[in-house]
Amino acid sequence: MRTNKRVGAILRRGDSVLLIHRHKDGQEYWVLPGGGIEDEETLEEALRREVMEETSLEVLSFDLIHECPGYEGRKHFFFEVKTAPDIEPVLGGPEKMNMSENNIYTLEWVDRNKAKTLVDQFPEEIREFL
Image 1 (cartoon, rainbow, N blue to C red):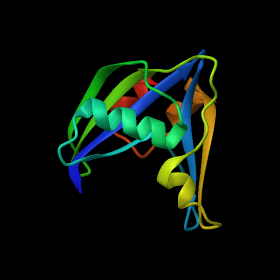
Image 2 (image 1 turned 90 degrees about the vertical axis):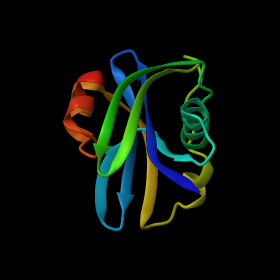
Image 3 (image 1 turned 135 degrees about the vertical axis):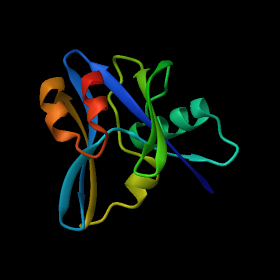
């Protein structure tokens, strides 16, 4: 069961940030890797699980960089995340299992400046951290 809290991961390489490009039911949008925190799960556990599920990358270190107390009725925690620099992300977990022609997930490294214009699923203040 999920709580009313979410984690989001900002993974950077050079001047790029990792985003999930979504095509779902005719809509196209971009999000940061992350998701809901399950009951009895700590922020760290949720962050590590979500990053592994969505990118197949192991979290080596992380820093909480921003909290949004009531965005979309949920508390969001955004982290800057470090992973091994020489391992490329690969979609996995429920996202890979739930892919269909109407529900497509693609991991993409996007220039930070471009990413700031694409990530419209999060509060405005998170864009400065990209």
